[in-house]
Amino acid sequence: MDYFEELSKDYRFKEGFHTCINCGTCTAVCPAAEFYKYDPRKIVSIVQTKDNDAIEALLKSDTIWYCGECMSCVTRCPRKNGAGLVIMALRNLSIKLGFFTESEKGRQVYPLTKALNGNVLNLGYCVHPSTFAFEDHPESGPVFKWVLEHKEDVYARLGANFAKEGPGALRKIPREDLDELKAIYDVTGGTERLELVEKYSRAKADEMSMTEEEYLKYTFNHCSAGHFNNE
Image (cartoon, rainbow, N blue to C red; front, top):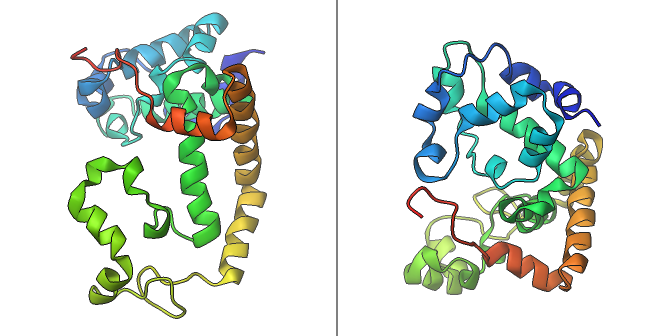
């Protein structure tokens, strides 16, 4: 497969990859580059070479998963390129080919996909108190732990219509609206993407001799050293 040709079919790549002069402005303004061992200029430079082996190495690397997709690069590039858009295209192809399971940060696509899309399709929200487990997010602190333990009372005091029919924040989303969301996923390729992530992640779990649940917890919690600039 010619990876550059495949990337060129992605509209984000078409919008973000024009006449890069490797000036490094994208790296200078990039918040992720400040903390991670990440250089968007180098990524665009590698893609520019059209070197299949080098692009495949990118698709299998942690590097393409450091970007926060803030698009600061787009706002400052003198040629109106978008390294973040190139990254999106690389991520898309990495998932399409199953290469994302070859890197630690890429494997984290699995728990995020299950959690966030599960919330959207089942509840109509990206993040929801009923599925937010404190043990998975100890950084949220003891106050939020208490909030979760008393969520019905707390959200009622705040004026939310928590998990109830009718209007209001955190209201119960009608079944017909959730069905419409599912239809949107089906038509736009979202359902196919979820199935791809599930398929490749299960295969990786088998390769690592883990059950699906063990793999889910491992990919969610595991973070090795060497990702940050200060390491």
